[in-house]
Length: 504
Image (cartoon, rainbow, N blue to C red; front, side, top):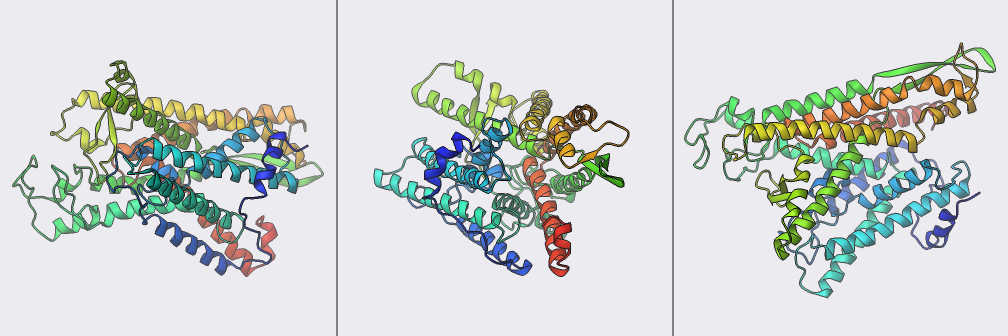
């Protein structure tokens, strides 16, 4: 029976714009073209500034969410994929916790589910657009007319992004818009930090090109000295000085860390535990149920970062209120902020004290070892260790919660095995028996997954990788999925009989 919750959204789904499923088989070449066109549209949107706001309008209160949302400040992709991801997470949690009854095998239920998700995404776009404007994310907007113009730009851009994602989801392209846009944003960040020719002009910088690879060859084939204002002013810059760079510029250590994190994630994702299975109707048939070491993938670190980002967002609101209205010093216990001065984007507030400081990623090894910083080495190291322990703990907790609500718990997997008429050899064909066996593995894999992804994300941030730790983990998983999808699509097109075997 269809849930009342889904039926509530039925009238709204009829008036929303919908992309129809293709009425013919889309060739692999056409899917590549659709995917590239959608990617180009998103990149163009990411470089079109919002009309009606100042380029340096206020602090970026959503700085900590940019990687997850695949967004770019001050452009039409200001909100990125935020409404889509949030709507999907809400529906996933409602379905996994059995608060709504959905039979995904029923076309009607499935259509209502996806329609409700789209309506929620549109509603979130409206809500977040208003919150951005009224919350001061764009600074002071001149008039009500300009506020309306900014709202319309954000709303229409949000609808375009939702439709772009739907085009891919309906089978015209490869993968999903969410994955494509996140991977593109991370790849662009890595490319910028590796090959940018622009100088780092922050105070205390070495005035070499920001891109570490360009800076490496500039030092290798040229003569450069540290400028005035640098702690080593007048000294010759050598390759060793590029290992760690200050002023937020990426160093050789960050480049090596990026490569090692990519390799580590790819290696860990290949590790798995296999449960032997036999088909109840045919004794000679044997199979395996694989459970990856990263059992819940990158979900724990995504949820942990989203939680952190929201805490920091509301902390900034309270801090701004204190600065403007002189609120009590008790806000200092929650969080103290100062204007960020490191990195290419210093338009955000950086926590320097209070509880929020403990959950803020450390600024990196280069900052800790920089003699010019005014914080003690012991305090910075304690912050890093404390953040790591808290971060891993939260990743483990979110991992366990996600297993329970997303259909990955032992009881859910046991039910799937029984429904597929399989059984574990040597054990009675019973759901409770299989669940008991799976409980030996799944809780342990969940904890290990939380520890591994949390540690990898922290290592990338701490050693100054060319993108954030969360961004690297997401991009590696997305690239692997795309490689597998492209391989299956190519094989299915060249050998049509392979389509059914590959589940396509």
